[in-house]
Image (cartoon, rainbow, N blue to C red):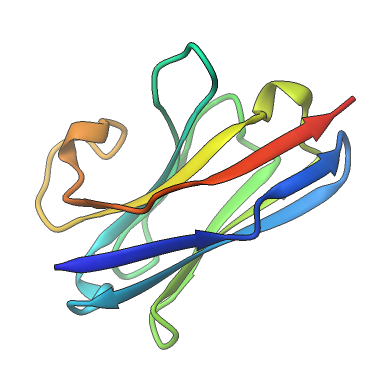
Length: 124
């Protein structure tokens, strides 16, 4: 079992910055790939970013590429999502998730454990 707790969400102005954190406990965090997803009201949960267990492999959704940065610190059992220049359309509940097995990292159903989410609201 892995428990995930997101933090760092809140209200931010468009063009500002915000850093989300995802603290893991339980099984060895460094064994899992980690992803960030988001879900806006009335919309499906969508992939935002992924970082491999080692931190070497990284991928982003086109909508956030160049603005968001995913990272992890396995010594602290924590993952991060740095959100720079957010836009109002980035408003959503952001979830971190980890996966032990393979399959497409952009698919939510390929993740084994999820946090409860943190709300991010971007004002224009």
